[in-house]
Length: 459
Image (tube, rainbow, N blue to C red; front, side, top):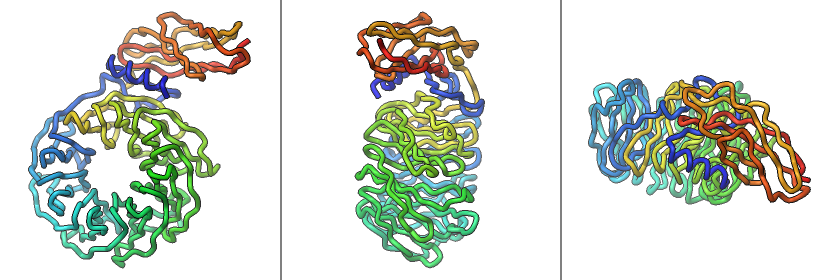
C-alpha cells in the first residue's frame, strides 16, 4: 500500500500518469498529454453524457453546466435549484434530482431548456430507467420510497414504500432464458436490505436481507449466462450475491473494509469490488466462487464504472487526485491517471473519460486513445547475496514520446528503489526470506509497463 502511495504521490507532483502491469490497448491508454480540464460550477458531481454534450450537476451553486464534447467549451449554465445531484441522461432528456426541493428537473438535451419539474419524494437521488426505458424510478432517501414516473409523459404513476434511506436503484437485465427488465433493485442503506420493485405492478415483490449500509447494486451483463445481483455492504465488509427475479441469496463475498459499488467484466465472470477504507479492489471470480486477488489502488477508492465493452474498470481514488484503470480481463491495475482532487465516479463515452473534481470545480477529460509511455524494461533478473539482492535490467525498446528519466523498482516486501541506472541493490534483507521485484521505466510523461523478476531466496 505504502509503495503505491509513494509512487502515486511522486507521479502526481511531476504530472506523470502511471501505467501498471500488462499493456493497455491503443483504445485504453491514458498519457498525461491527453488530459485536459474544464472549469464548471461548485461541487460538481458525476458527469453524464447525452449525444455530443456533457451535463454536470453542481450541488454547490444549484446549476447544471453543459459542455460541448467536441470543443470542451461550456455552452450553457442552467439554474435548476438547491443541491442538484447526479442526473440521468437519455437520448433527448436529462433528469436532474433537486434534493433541496423534492423534485426532478427535466432538461431538453437538444434545446437545453428546462421543460418541466416533476414532484417526487423528499431527498431524491439519481434515478434510473426500467421497463425498457418506459418507467423512471426515483429514490427518495428521506421519504423511504421510490417514485415511478411515466417516461413518455412525465406523469407520476405511483409511489412505492421501500426500506430506510433508499439509494441509487439499478434495473434488472436477465439471461438467455428470462428477462428482468421490469425489476428494479433498490438498496436501503438504513435497513440493510434490497427491495425488488416490479415497475409494472408498482409494488415490492420481495425484500432481500443483505448487510449493513448496502450500496448501489451491480447486475450481470445481459445474456452473460447468469442473472445475478451484487450488493456491496459498506458497513459489513461483504458483498451479497443474489438471483434476479427470486432474490435468492447465493452467498456473501468477504472483502476488505468499506466495499462500495462494484464493476464487472464483459461476461460477468470477474467482479471488481472497491474497498473504500482499505485502498484496494477485491477481484471475485464467479467461476471459482472466491476472491482470487486483491489489487492495490489509491486512497479511498469509490464506486467503479465499466467501459462500454466491459474491458476496463475505472475506480476513482477520492482520498487523493487519481483514478485507477483496471484491465478487466487480466485482473491487473493497468494505469493510474492523475485527475483533480477528490474525484467523483467517472463517466465513459467511447475512448473518452470524464471525471469531476468535487472540491476544485472542474471536470478532467482524459483521451484514452493515445499511447506515450515506455515499454517494459528487458531481461529483468534478480540474484541474491549475503543478506542482499541485486536487480538488473536493460533499457526498454521504446521510450514512448519522451526520454526515460529514471526507473522505479519495488520489492514484494515493500522496499523501493528509484535510480537512473539499470540496476539496484537491496541490502539488509532477512536471510532465508523470499522476495521478487517489479521494474518500470519513467519518462516525463508516464511510468511504463512493468517487468517482473522470479522469486529469489536471500542467502
